Length: 336
Image (cartoon, rainbow, N blue to C red; front, side, top):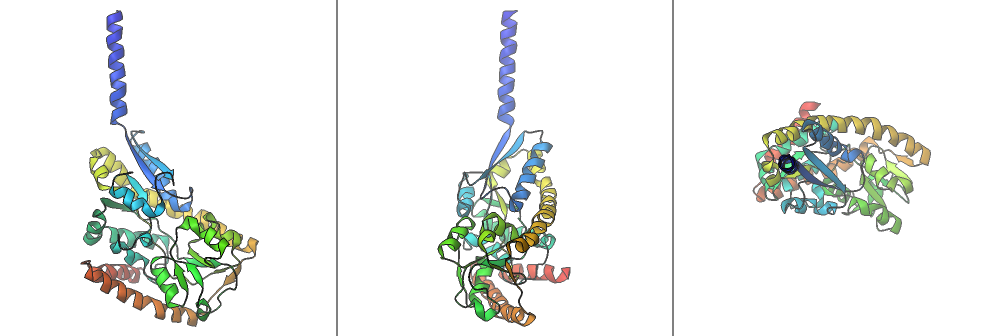
């Protein structure tokens, strides 16, 4: 009997080890703290775990695995299996998706941002571009149009932007420069310190980031309708890790993306945007609204030159730059 029990115990122990070995755990590199911007990943983790009965889990880390500006590098070497980053952090590493950061594209909803992003992500040139870093684009983190929050004298016309030091990346930075401002690229987590120290006077963010990274706490003004564009921040996975998944795990991951994005958009619209307006009123932040003439002048100075330069520069890299730009602008035009 003792011998039988010993064998049974050994089988149970081995079975336990086998079950444990079959479980798949991915590490996910985010930054900051849980907020509207990360709800797509949080929901994805929840759905994947549910669909696999806990056998496939996403372990989300907020800054514990890598700096946000180095997440793509971490993916490339397999330091973690999934990460979020923004294209403007390193445009030379991911030129294909920077088309989504061009100024004044006219993307006016999170739903359209999602659809256009997914179309660009699936373009063969984009797939090839990110594959250089062993990265597969999984889903975007759709953001509303950015606006500026700042301290000191508020700009009330495009001319007032001359000399304004502002944190702005990608196409928004190009738009700021076209208006005479001095754009600076810095990590979102460094912006509050930059404003406190006077390194910058303003920051270009979506509402959730103005609240999450502290600029709303000290801002004396913000622009209500500048709407120069938004950054594009994809969630990517390591290709080797993705291909190593079982068919069931891969299906659980892929099939969860649409629901995760639907959740994200609902959360952003109903939670974040609902809080932003009342908070601006409560803090007495001056709302700066530009005239149609100023906006038209801003767009004329920034949009076409930025697009032409982007197309020329990336065509030289061998990208189907005009095709990618036409894909984006065509989808935007069709949505109107």
